[in-house]
Image (tube, rainbow, N blue to C red; front, side, top):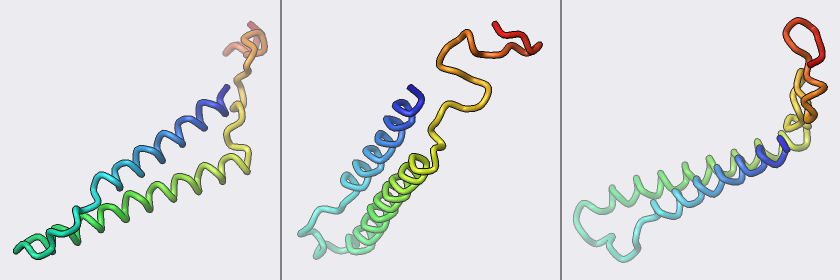
Length: 91
């Protein structure tokens, strides 16, 4: 279950970052308007930062999946009977 949750989390982050990048892309055809060229540069910069962050998140997701970091952490279990209480008793 933890693997599914982490997978959905990373896919959601990538989708949000890609959507942000797509929303920030400047509209074409307005470059001739005075003062817009600087704004378009900043918007394109923001787009590339958002897409770069999405690509980085994909890389982290693949790395975590390959290294097995999405497994159930130590001290927890998918079955409640296997979780050890603070005093060392199995509860």
